[in-house]
Length: 77
Image (cartoon, rainbow, N blue to C red):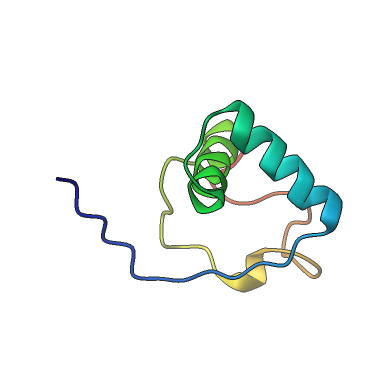
């Protein structure tokens, strides 16, 4: 028996088209839930960008409008 230890909850809002795309991918990939599909897509996206785990050095100010190096994140490509 696998025990999952997820201690943080993340809530997101999706448009109808985003939700339809997520569900279409989820069913094609035979994922058991939307949450599992989102976790898998997040893992794939981070891996594609060269991140396997967070390095703990990034702060929220490093992202989005006003980022120190727009379009670049330390540790990424």
